[in-house]
Length: 314
Image (tube, rainbow, N blue to C red; front, side, top):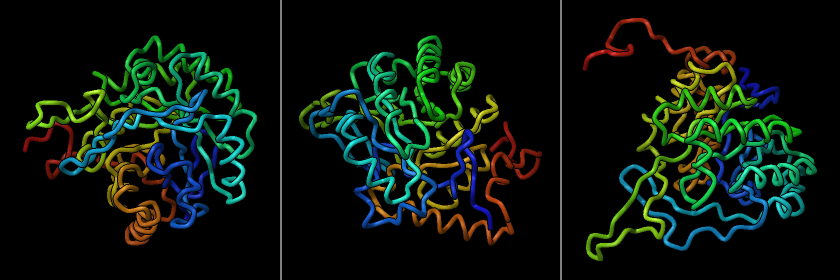
């Protein structure tokens, strides 16, 4: 059975990656998961300087999901290159570095620092985080700003450039096409959905920034639809993320058009979630006689029948 997939010229041994912000820098999980078995690890968002993140509370469990307002707390790109990347390289981990900034110049400085590090396979440009006051989601919801940023980042990057899109837009296809035209090598779809929680007794919002990012199984149907729409709108690979908890979920995202998937919130619930999904995906392929997992990508049957086609009446 061939589980390998290729994303923007980078061959991954399988399509299962750990999502940014849910797996630390990867090294935190080395005693729990054999990182070498994964398709890759996407690091926490890395900024030009260390960031303290948002005040607590930062996490809140919701029905079938989680709200988070961490605020991209991280040690900074330089510290990552010096203190975490060498260990990841030693472990033989495929590393995708998530890059964040509050201005185009910030993003470019982070990329410049990471360019000097050995052992990074690709960059994931975070243009979609809803938990900071500036930058992030501003770029991900404006096609002109996104184009400017992606063009500049592509020119600076020495590795393939993935762009992580926001779901908090009217048309994700429009933003996806703008990123593709600007030079993105792949797209990650999608980040968390804007949500909020209120303490009714105190009559106050639960989070200091009022809004937070909703993730987990609750958003899976929404994320699946966004992956489907994005894959039909662009010709570059799509990496699907959002509520994936099982191998069946992963297979659905691949069928919708994703070339690979990322496990996010499930890592908080079960630190071995990436391992479990990978093992389950292997069994799924064996059960269905699938010799190469990449043949699942975009193989959704849209022919009329059984009410399973677009516009089918319930």
